[in-house]
Image (cartoon, rainbow, N blue to C red; front, side, top):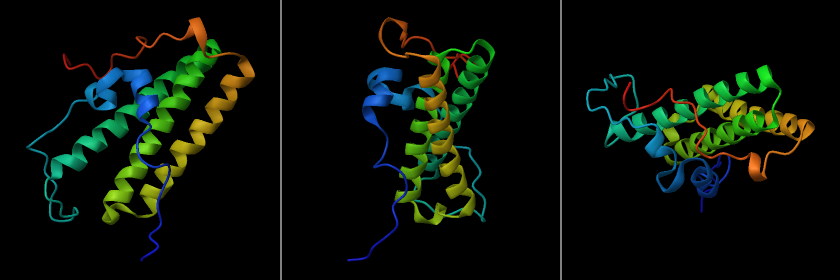
Length: 153
């Protein structure tokens, strides 16, 4: 039995994604299955490049929304926004880890650094949220998300 290095958590946190996105999880928030995506010869060979393209779209969408929540947290100093940023970075990290675990050809220094960045930022913003105050209870509004990835755009 080989001892392959496994990255991050054990796949996406379904409960965390359902909390933020409902039953469709993050996949429904960041729709992208571009058939025309040009992988080029330098890209890894996969049975269907849209799988990695879609996952990459979700990961970058989560990271973009985490950055937006961070900006709001810095602007208004709200625990809610810092906790949202932490959650989104955690979800992005879990997705990155799963992608690296299922596609070993994507394991390189750049992907490992991006994974570390996601989890480091998640810890940092969770600590900021705790320092400011509560993020649960009536303050929680799961409908509150940035509309930067709407299908209408």
